[in-house]
Structure formats: structure tokens, C-alpha cells
Image (cartoon, rainbow, N blue to C red):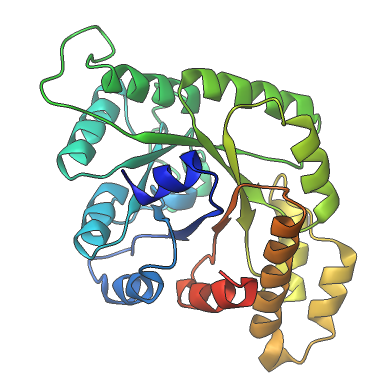
Length: 293
């Protein structure tokens, strides 16, 4: 059984970390960061053309991480592939022994570095989950038999600070019905949001990994508040970062992330965390240290 599946099914506090493939073929830094968290996380979640930016693929990166002894989570977006290509990627992932999949609809190409690229969106996140579940059952989407076994732990995303929250809960219910066993949340920075979210989703039969982004500066926090849907950084955290000496702000952001994870665990407001260092994956070990993980 995979590490992540074992943690989720046995009620352990699951920990995953996000890593973005390079825009190129030099994986040296990524692999150094991966080796630094080997044995400390249950899974390494590999982004799939994050923010619609062309990079090396999630599948190739997952294979490299698995060869290095880490457990990868393959991200699969519906933006760039039709249902034939998505199912083909799943078959390839199964061949490589990749045990986990996170289904995403994907940001539109206009926000990326190839804004003229034609988006596909043949399947959204629910459709991707349904395709994977069908394949786990031994068939492709049109009912043809699949030779050999396919088995994945399936996950999806959710935004706890969404108005109305009921719309997100409805989507969660659809994703669970389609096969999702765990959810990664958008980054959360305040306890009240997680308290409300935990209370309103306690009927959902899936585990929740709270999204954690370490702050680097007050301007970064303000930018996310103004430009990233579903993210809210409280004023007191912005002031805390603002009042920290410039050369100590990264460390302060790591400290804040660690404190938040500890409190989430103490109040049992999530079943694990998903750490998104966003271009500073080398800081993940320090975040784990700060959180006591």
C-alpha cells in the first residue's frame, strides 16, 4: 500500500509537498529539494503545467521522483488534453507505478506564457475523476476492457474561503461521488475559515489536507489577497511580516506556517497538510521542522 493511501485510510496526519517541474531539462535543484524531504512526507505532488506555463511534464517528473524513492502524486488537468490523452496518461502512470492522482480542471491558457494556446477542457475535474474510477474498474470510458491493472488513490481540490461556501461543498460531494478520497485546499491563513469549513463538511466522506503557503513578505500577502481567488491573509499576519527585518522575513513566514500547522493539528481542523512553497521548495524541510513534523 502507498504511503499516502495508508496515512489517509488509517487516520494519520498526512503530509504532502508540492513541487513544480522545471522549465527546461535541468532537474538538479528539484531533485536536491526532493531528497531533502525523503522520508518526511507521505507524497510529493507534482504540478501539471502550473498556471498554464509550459514546463516539463508532471508524469516525467513523477517517474524521476519515484526512482529516487519518493511517492509522487500525479496532477492531471483537463486544460491541455482530451479524454483519450488523459486516459493514456493514466495508463502510463500505472506502468510507472505512480499510485496517486490529483484531478484539476486547470487555469485557462490566457493566464500562462502561451496565451494563444488552444485550451481543451474536454473533461473537468469531476470528469477526470470519473475516468480514473472507470479505469480502476477495468474499463476505459467507452467500455473497452483494459489489459492489466490500474489503481490510484484519487484526490481533488477545494477552496474553503469561497462565497457561497455551499457551492464548494456541492462540488466536493460530486467529486467524492466520482471517486475522490482526499482534498487539497487552496492556501488558508486564518483559523476561523478552517473552523467553519470543518464544521460544514463533516458529513463528507473524504480527508482534507489544508493548503499551506509560507509568506515571504507583506507585499506578497497583499498581492494574494487582491489577485488570488479564495485566499485571505489576515491583517495581523501582514503587519507581522511588514514589521520583520527584511533579511528575516522568509524565516518569519516559515515560522508562521509552522505555528498554523500546529494549531490546525491541535484543533483537529484537518486530516493533514499540503505545503506549497512556490518556487522555494528548498524551504520545505524548515517548514516541517517549524511544524514539528
